[in-house]
Image (cartoon, rainbow, N blue to C red; front, side, top):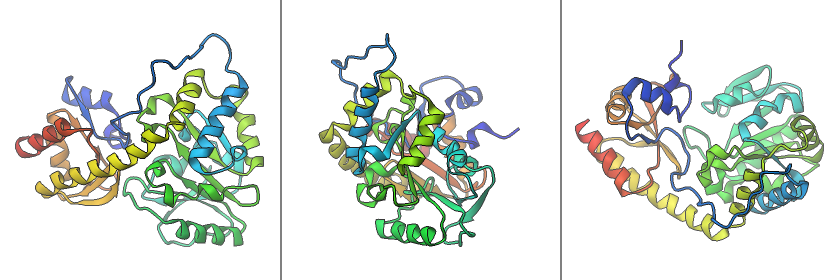
Length: 325
């Protein structure tokens, strides 16, 4: 049986089973630990079925945030579900770039893993993340436009998973989504807004593609809670702008702590740092014994991914654990 802690981040149940109960600091995901605070005056009626106008309002607010027309946006109950339906919606062959999300390999019935820069065979769809996870590689808009042109010439799709792109709006290719391009973009609500349990994501695509998603998802794909919270959050421009600034500052502060312990970030995102170290397994154990969970990798045993801590108290706890175990 595979180790559940090597499969994905956020598996606190497995960590507690192995290292005991207590007050855990979970740094194994790239979820913002300073979540958007749900307003007390937000009125959510859970009695009736959600009104279709609420879904349209959420998609319009999200579209404004993404820089795309509302008719190119379909809300889904988490971007992972949208990715897993991708092959059924688009058909054809797929390729996914590695290293990357495990889910990308499950998007198409038969998906070929490709390293960055490898040629895509024929008209196969190319699925990649920008910025990438876990290594944080960020492609600029121009690079993505070149990939889109290459796929268009080959009559294939370009699919970009922008789960961590809220901190990098200038690099997003979302504004290029329209009915004339074979471009699909996925966006996640939970990572940047720190509310992953809400299970809310979006597919940005040509309208015929979105029509297939809507047919699969049914009439009420998003519950009333997610509709209300997501709409209000995307309308909160002040919080979004301030969070982009604070995430970058906290990540730089975290770099200094890691460097003080001889841990250099090989990959970077404002929401996580990827560290490469020959004794990564020992460092993981040292942290886990003090109830700090980071993300190890079965395919790269020298890697550890650290979510960026929320505050000085979390930084101090990590510092003490790295010093003394």
